[in-house]
Image 1 (cartoon, rainbow, N blue to C red):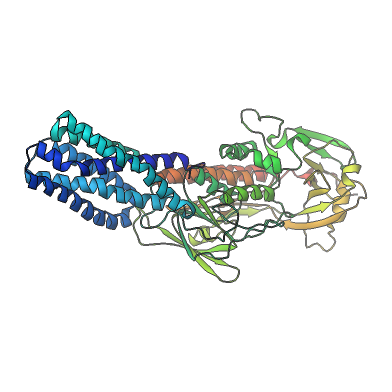
Image 2: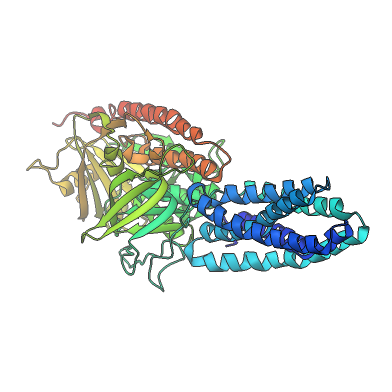
Length: 603
């Protein structure tokens, strides 16, 4: 409740509650005395108190009905404003009938507003801390309840009558309305985050996902069949996880749906986290975590070496490749980091698991997205995301905004009828992860984050996964379905020595240059591989995905919190699509200068 992303808003909620109770208890305690001092009869004074109570009751009922359609925040602002306006109009000493109406409006703006604030608090906090949040707000608000009557007594003692009392209590109402405007809007008619859908004893207060030594995360037990959140994120890879964490830091709850329960370490994709991405992680307080998890560290090497073989001779080297350095990289506050994508995901999953604003559904895949015919105030309806696990169990998420971070085969993108356009490289590649105790001993070259081996017959790249015996390799320009292809033999050729070798996993792939024709439509947006597929040459793909998520996160937060209109979200595609187009083109050019393009033909 007072953690990162909630502290400032919690303090404002407490102050709003205090101002509301100060106004409510101050105005309701002293009307008979103030009215009698102003010349109204005892009967009229008691009638004013009755009008105040009726205004509070009727106003609360009407506001509750309206709040289900437009949300609670506008009603709280309206209630404070109504109370302030009614109190200020009392300074003109109106007749009894008009005064009775103004007192009733003050009742709505006082007691009725406090009821709406309670509703707002219940919708604002995640299920795991909802009761605590409401309890603390009301406890702090009681200070206002104590101060209100005392404040009123002081005003009566000044002898300023109705005008003085009206102005005195209009002031906290005005401040309450202004402070409420700074708080985020919550989804109308539904909790902003669901009750904790995961079993007791699991990790954290948000994702509550269990893990074992194989990095398994599953939360299928004792879970509800539906949830509500301002944002539903389909896909829990790096871009989806980063988006959820960035939103949470800004106080925006989300539900993240990801079919994988196991992070597959032996099949790393990206290995380069550049300085810009590390700076994004720094902003979330996460720059140190991946560096601590990375092996080897940046201090091991910052070079890419081109060579004949790893035991042969060096051709050339590139220092500070991939923005690696022993300190900040040039103008960036962070340098790059060589770390396999699965390790980055483990770091992000662990952070999400400890965040109460993030609810993760691992083991579930989004199967459809539908817009509902209901108003939201954004110009489009809320959305229902249907999800299914491997056993056919179904769940639904209701959200104002949906983000497709679900990869190249994105269900979200297909639901919008958007296609990926572009082409593929002419030749394929095979990635491999292997162990070798002898390779590090027999390699005669300086340490490097990557060796580009221009060996005869077989060309590609080799690098360390850790400082023990685990390595990765990319054999370029080959086909895994070639009956004569032998990954172990290819790696030995690039090593230049007959080394011990155990293949842990192989992964054939073809570089693709694909870009979505659109990044979504109002209310639904695509990030990462759902929007573009970059060739790996240059290390752009993963980093472009994180850039997408960072760009979209603050814009979603701005719209949900009400300090920007929905039109701001159109700038996401305008800014990010051209960046993806440029990085795809650059990576494709890099793909024309691979290891086999420099190597001598086989003898």
